[in-house]
Length: 419
Image (cartoon, rainbow, N blue to C red; front, side, top):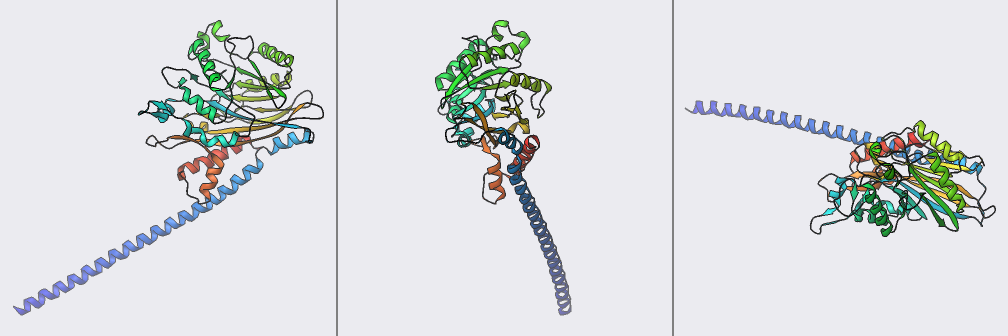
């Protein structure tokens, strides 16, 4: 009987040894797996840091390269600044849209009101020093049913509070709500405090002349097309400043008769979601320059297109921004989320009294989508500063995926705009 017990204990001892070996083997394998995973993760983090470091260098290089050719062109043909000169600062933003998703993001069910301020508050600092901030209000602003063709007054107020103070309502959606809708939109925008240009509801021309620092600047605006244009009546189309060479000549003549010293054209043209300047855009730009226009700001493509400085017949610089993208929108194309706040500096000479293009630069901005469940889903952010903050290791609210999109967008801008 005792022999059987010894035999049983021996079997248990062997089992214990085997179980211990198995346990230790499993533990060893797990430790090896953990060490390998840590090593792989550390390597990935190292590679990621190296990539981010490289991207940081590229971002810094971009800031030095962008606009270098334009700045050189301006400097070569400009007079030196004197104490008697006055400086006029102008900023430009792209198309201002209000989508159904933005309406949902801004709506407060408890108060039955809208608040869009979180979407564009971050941008106000980039344009706060400007004397004039222009943009294209590409939505109706009327009381009633709100959708992607008609925004509440709170939306327009938020845009105004961000700094924009002059808008054109001449675009391919001008007649989406009919002539009455166009008139109500204009009236509401003026009541909010905007200078509004682009319609011909009460006058034969669509020219607005603003006096800034004793300088008269004329704003002419046109759209090259209208949605459902074939179905529009002549009376309807005559309410919007549609582009034609005859209309341009008439408007420029009106501007000069009213002693305008600088002529800026805001024009809706080009192909949607295309970074390429069309032949039609180039031809129209040639005509505008030949007829005395000093500055051309394009809209409609919803993405950024190239910019250039040309010389007119008098040898003066004419700056053309074929498209600076949208200002605020939720268009699905990633290219359309990358936008510009364009800053233009004009100089009125104290010697000859002429107004010259003095400086051009810009801030890239990006429409960030925080997801449907976020309390504040959409917000505009400064692309470069946000990316730089992230790659410096400072805690931010953006994800690595968003960071990669910002870097990709900045690289795309560099390809489009750098010489």
